[in-house]
Image (cartoon, rainbow, N blue to C red; front, side, top):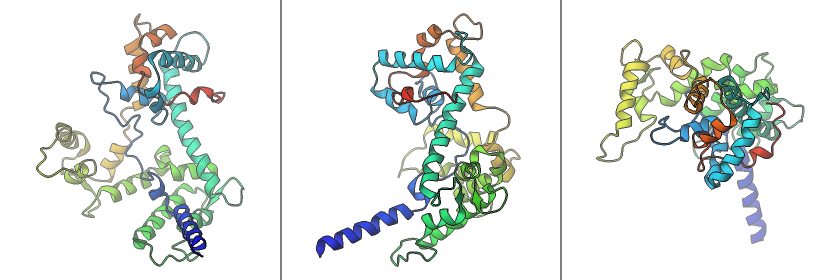
Length: 321
């Protein structure tokens, strides 16, 4: 009897885990921008930013386990993939295309996993009914958990997901095609989702509920001070960034348009700048293109021996790139 009870409890727990909203199962919050890396871009300190930009954040983890010789060997194979016209040179546009491919691959792989999870009738689409039943069944009557903690929190999550789903669902039929489901999962990738990205960013950061983000809310979103801890220099720099570049009308807070400018900057493309940076730093003869030797001579900027998960990547097919 005890064994049966244990199995029943484990089964309920497993079902509950499957039903936890996406916000709890993974980082469902929209990123403030299409960041290439979580690291500061400071080559005088390290090349972590360059590694993640060139390889992708997830793939940039296993070169930690590689020797310099292994890193260079694998980078050489990657260079062959980047040289799309097979002219034995790599240009900035080819590096940019590679970085965009790496990023798209992460998005597509994530969507593949999520479609498998939610597409219950296997028609290649995900309806709001399929998604909500799988994610919020404990709230909509299929299963009642009387001891669910923070049930109101999950109700708010469901409303937020429904709003985003409806925004992604262009034809309004509450059935998301693969592209629409991609927009739902990764709204920062789609221009027509920009409004909901701004709305959710405000909801995440605006603690006093005035519909804008002041400097204190902006800093609190990225930094929680310890007791009696002096404010780090990088936080002081962020405060100045807020005054100089975030609060464009100088009224002490960011409104919707300023937040949109922050998370969707129109004045520069991070990936394009990084591609040009990698080329410039490696182009010894200054002919605006790189040979494989030039890249391998500067291999530690591209991959290093302590920053990638590229072992498995080289066994994948890159025909679509």
